[in-house]
Length: 432
Image 1 (spheres, helix red, strand yellow):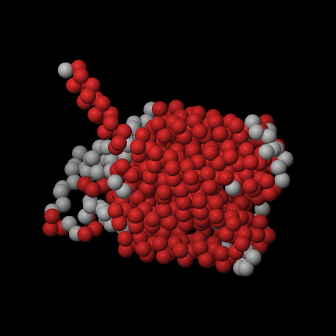
Image 2: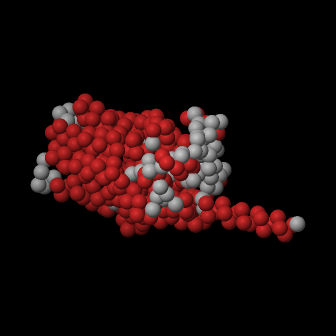
Image 3: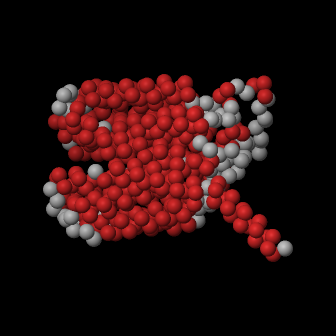
């Protein structure tokens, strides 16, 4: 194993200084805004679908292809670019990716048919897939190890808050004053501004500085496949498959379950589903921050239990919108906690510094491609052949499998490790 040579003092510039609290908040804010814009760009098309179907002559199969192209490109890009970020630095990936997905989001307004829209959305997904793991590592780099969970949670709550929570409201209001192509063009502007600020603010840390954010403190160079030697990565992939399968099935089947099986009207269904964005944002903000204090595994097990019990209650609640809203809000909050911890601290803290983005990218990419692709197809088969009331129980199975994988994870929270080390020393002293 080659160890990276120490950086000579004369070559260390301001960008390699220990990050200050001011830098922490600037970097975390910019990465959170970046993820929020990713959420907006990804979910912007959902409330526009009826208009796009009318103007571009699309059918339901076209909508499935458009959605699938973005998810597939996102997953493959995260899978392939995570190691690139480790090799050339997260800043060199983040800024071009932000410029790319912002411009491509704007180009969506120039689409003339299904082919051009699929191509634009696929390229946008590739840029967003490159941005995501690199931005998570940039957030962790700006944060003291004791605030990894909180700050990655702040970042990861933004897609839920802006993408799922506020975008449908914003888009439907903008449609009253402008045509849909201008809405696509409008959302490109904030991304370009944030990219410019990120270019000015983000630092380029040394390998030794990156390694401080892991439990290995390993500054050596590693091949990408070595990431699988650290058990949190293969276990994290299993977890992410389960979490995304649960999330995608909820998004895909629960609207029809509410309308077709529980016979809610469209307004009641919309009210219940609004819990997805706001619940996800609250969960991503609160529970990962708690993991900084009591450990990653306890919070993940608590979150898995919360998802399971909430969905179990949801599926046993009749056509009562307020209880359904409450159950789904708790479930989505706990689910976003699981996703945040899996793609962030649990993966990145467990591997050498030069594999942090690789680990996160592997988990995001494989989870997106397979968890986001296979699960809804299987759930759709169940709904078609056995009834939607049976298909919507699938998230309970996936959460149960994921909880088993969580039990085998290696704890990485610095506070929990320090307490365990202190307990071990105290126990040894008592025996001697």
